[in-house]
Image (cartoon, one colour):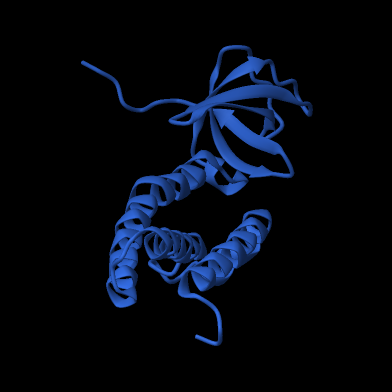
Length: 176
């Protein structure tokens, strides 16, 4: 092929895709937004597929006596298996974990919290909200500028600019 041995082409491909992978790691947030709507087209999976294919092809071409077509087929099958494992057991759990740890101010509305620093009339205190991901501590003020004592349960009415607006929480559900 153009005066180059096939194992040299595999090696050059491995080096080039390795460099592209490093660039992707540095700028992955930009690339992830482009491919977000397409489930199986993930740049990390595509790059790993090409990297593993070229590495396996290089090694098999250099150290085995199989034909080039068989080596390419074996390299692609091996790469597909490893890339699928990377996708389903590493990338999918990481992406779902990344989403579940974040919260927005809008998502705090309707949450029940507990006052840990009393909220004075026309002033600020602090509340904690226990979630599945941990405890969130937020600056709070009374929704109707009312005072709320320490250890009271409060309902978050809205959140904006880092402050939650709360009312005393009165549960209507009681055990009999």
